[in-house]
Image (cartoon, helix red, strand yellow):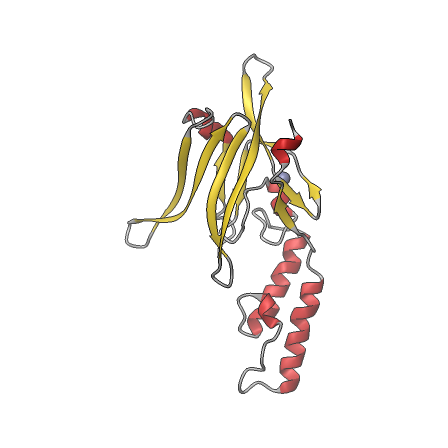
Length: 203
Ligand SMILES: [Zn+2]
């Protein structure tokens, strides 16, 4: 899955579309052009503007095909510009390793395999980053994936409880399995969630 295909929400786009006015509901769609020149819808989310920000509604599918509903509010603040007027910013709702982000940003992202719309900084701290080149965390993750692929696994977590593949020597299997486990140990232990109660804490 190419990592550069993050889905982004831009607060200024929403502003231009009038989608920050409380009560306005919008659907944001992301599509790609397929090999036949047709467009294919890849993702969509519902956005409802409230007096304090926007509420995002969407569903993601996990590795095991279970579906998860998401429904959380991203606060929007208005900041006075030097030249008069006000500009909107999202407050990033990310909570990474129990630390809430709260950065003021114009764009929020999620990678195709991600669950939440967060700022770039938050994604760089997590497994599924949006801006990964040269990132030591990502290097560790890439090492894990490479080790896992030698065992024919797309998802390194599959190593838990995996049976030895037919035709593979026990010793080879143990070594490859250990490689994956060691590589996973070296990955960042980022735990990501969004702050559902963020808005009320800003009251
Ligand atoms: Zn953030």
